[in-house]
Length: 293
Image (tube, rainbow, N blue to C red; front, side, top):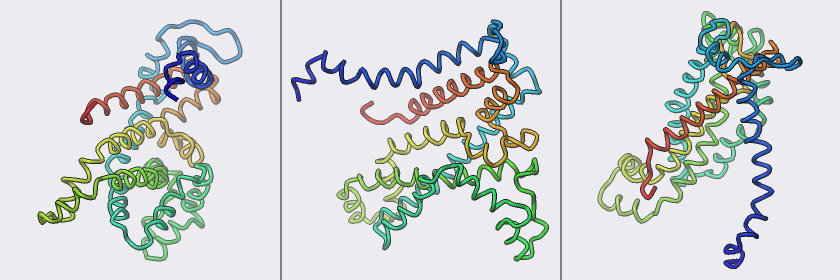
């Protein structure tokens, strides 16, 4: 094995297929999007080079609503950080204590992650249905008829309505990561703290959470980056409507490219998504430094 590791030719041969695949699927499309973003192009006729005009228009042209979609993505990211992740961490801390049915609950909470977002979107479409949906039916049953809404069809409720299934679906994903991290914390540290009279809350905040800081950082990156590139759930539920009330950068990109045939503007949105995801990922890594890095 050591001989293979020292053999540079063997390393190149083993890494070459993965490198080619990565370049074809990730690197080349990014550069192509960057090139298309500098053109005024309808996807059919020859494109015209316009430089950075597409990027300027994203923020200048109010009809595109790009700034509004960025704000929606920020709201989803904030809810992911301050609602989704704390719930996931709380569940992980409870389950990691070895409660009865621990494996069962782990499986149940993780099931939504395994189900296609399209399927989950269709499920929530039924829940939100204004005529026979479970939500409105329940509100009427408990005497809260004034709270009944066309949840996905009203501007004031559409964004919140699409956020709930997005947050709900991936609670189990982050919970499993936190759970694995908590289980890796040395038991000797916890037992020593218990001997010294530390309460469960002190053990969680002073020992367990600092020990799983790398996992927390990774979950923060996944949550925030995932919020800026979320697409499928919103596309199924509202397609960014009504009146751009639930539009996010990824759905705007699709609407610009395939709805309006503005490939240059759509590619500019794609490049902006890539840049934002990269900046947030690097920023979080810098802020949440781990010992030894």
